[in-house]
Structures are given as structure tokens and as C-alpha cells.
Image (cartoon, rainbow, N blue to C red; front, side, top):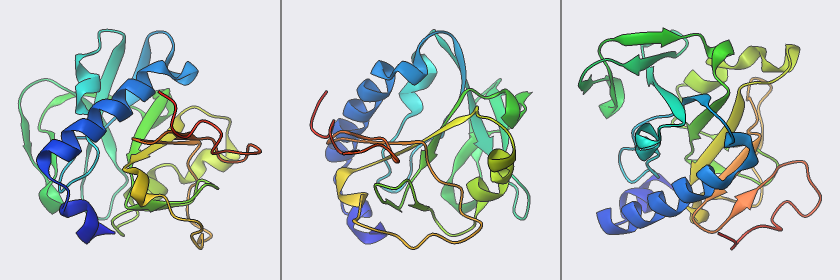
Length: 186
């Protein structure tokens, strides 16, 4: 899946990112002024960073420190190189993950049940592990290219499921009958 994603042209990634962000902006979960956790796409990922340009959101980006849960900062300057080739804020205002309304999550592969495979370090699972004991927010929305949605993934006990999956082909709402009913709509 990583090889296929990396093989996408920059133009294909840009187009997919535009479609996905447009779908995100139309979601009822993103109505009103919200604090959103997002990321800057790398290596062919669908890139939600244009959400930072929307006046209706305060967007915090993840800061990755090996072995620790993610921290989210509203950037107060240029982004810096982070681990694993990521771009992250070097300084800014920290937002507690419990104060985020929505978190846009990168995906290597996902299935219609909301199971997700990331890059293998478990940062999102560690950071949001307590969601099962407390009511939402944040709403976790995985974004990816349509080809990254597979029929089924084997979930591990520590995996934190996604609440929604948004692709360039549509929206999947795990847990709903006919969750692919909106696939192909704008």
C-alpha cells in the first residue's frame, strides 16, 4: 500500500487532497468554529494542511516525540523537520487532545469498520487510547486515497477505531448500515 501511495504523482495527490478537504468541509461534524488536529501530508498521503487556511478552525498539528503520545500545537512560526520525514511545529500553543473537536488521521490502509493501519509506531493509538472510557470528542476522521480502503483489516486490542473515513471517492461511516452509501458523492 505504501509503495502504491508513493507512486501517485504530485498532481494526483493534489487533486485527491482537494476533493477530500472539500468533503471534510461539508461534514456536519465540522460545522461551527472548531479546534481540529490535522497533519501535513508526506510521501503521497492525502494532505489536509489546507484546513489551516479555513478561518472557522483553529488547527493544531502533531508533534512527534519517539516513545511518547502525540502533542498538538497551533503553530506560531514555520514548521520544522520532525522524525520520520514529517513536518511539525517547533513552537506554538499546545492544545490538550481532550480539547480537540476533530482529529484528521493519516491512513496507510483502513476498512469499512473503521479499523486503520498507520505507519506502525502507534502514535495515534497511544494518544487516543482513552477514548473508549470517555465520551467523544475528538471525532477521529481518517483520510486517504480510495485505493487505501480494503475489505477487512484484523484489528488489534490496542487499535483505536476511526469514526469516519473520507476518501477521494466518498465517505464511509463505520457502524452504519450500508456505510458506503455516500461513496462517490461530493
